Image (tube, rainbow, N blue to C red):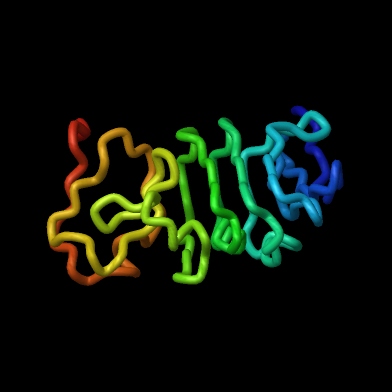
Length: 172
């Protein structure tokens, strides 16, 4: 059998990573004093696939004005991006397969920007992040949506009676 890589914490260019035993890496912290943060795709031969939750510095990222998460990132853990309170620009790839609930509070710059909302729904790229009180009873998810944040509809709204995914094949 192939040797198991040790689980270790690794730092590079101000980022902190957790190097997982399966050869992937999780971002645990971002550089201090950087206004435009772009998450790397690889670190020390490990493919970066996840942004961790409640990790150092990710909780206190008020100086970040823009956050770019590149293709290849698959998971955004609990509160992974919601702490970037002053970021006016957040770019997420369509490669994301799971987004833990992100509590974009009214005070965040991204939340306040009406351009990030479509019929009561906040999107980041092809990812549905949350809904607000203005969402209709029948929520028609924007075509091309590739991921819906866990709890985006369930935890934030009781008005929705039906969710429709246009042009989405029904399994079976």
